[in-house]
Length: 243
Image 1: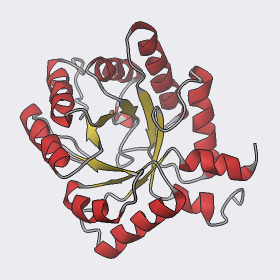
Image 2 (image 1 turned 180 degrees about the horizontal axis):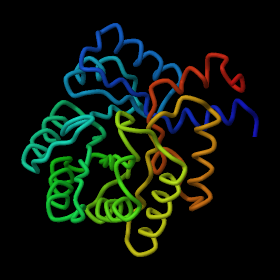
Image 3 (image 1 turned 180 degrees about the vertical axis):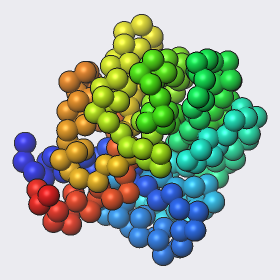
């Protein structure tokens, strides 16, 4: 596969991200311009920026809104429901929502299930990406939270916000393995969103390969995404292979 084809493959999976509450219209316009030019899968922003982004994104590029607290998720299922519902009312095609970890052996438990149900119901059929904040979880908690999120109807399980640690190779392998396992027993084809410190093409390619090693069917933007704000520069501005 040529470098241009490899680049196109990654761009097709990219959720171009701008998660700054103080982002200016100039900042938002630049992100939308980049997404339109390079045809990324989505642009991911806060709900307060939804109106501007919707007006500036071309057809075929999804608007993903982060709802329910970021980088720290809400502890209240009712608050999560209201926040996700508000994001839907602002035109979200997709919802990214943090399932906040608890430093407790009972995690994930009834509270987390209630949050996941709130997310799923409030999303009203929109694509739901549940952020598991994996740097704060041990393997048992990670596997249990992933299985619970998938069982509650998450369309994607997402590694982390990137604000409290990055995404490890082990995490990606576990997420992909759990999604593959889920698909053996249940209907539907959920996916994996890789995020957290991914700024180089070589890292994106390595992580995609880890996903595909677990399950080759987890591919294409309907089942695999990469959340990043700085990866695009390395893909298209001459940074390929330099570092």
